[in-house]
Image 1 (cartoon, helix red, strand yellow):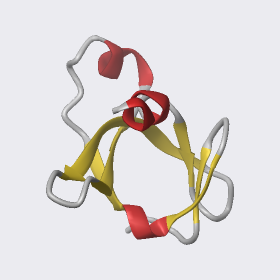
Image 2 (cartoon, rainbow, N blue to C red):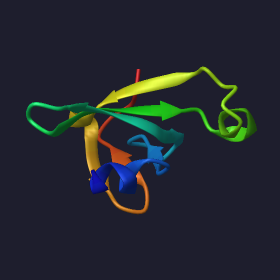
Image 3 (cartoon, helix red, strand yellow):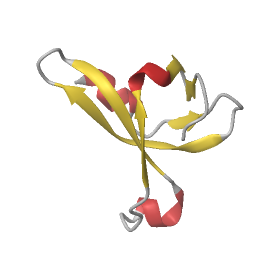
Image 4 (spheres, rainbow, N blue to C red):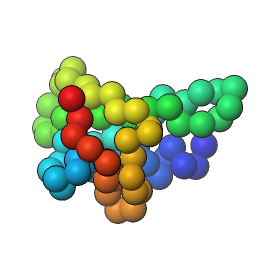
Length: 77
């Protein structure tokens, strides 16, 4: 899926433009072929080495805009 390849690795910003992580993976509904959620890693060296276990799951409904970075509509709990 080309869209997935374009989204993975992008920085994600909350509504106050603070970076909350990078897209590590995407949850897709295979029946409808729609994105359900973005799975974010915290970033940094440990993330790059695969040592970090911290993940944030963001429902796709929170995505306001996708460009060079991904902007969310509100804060992530």
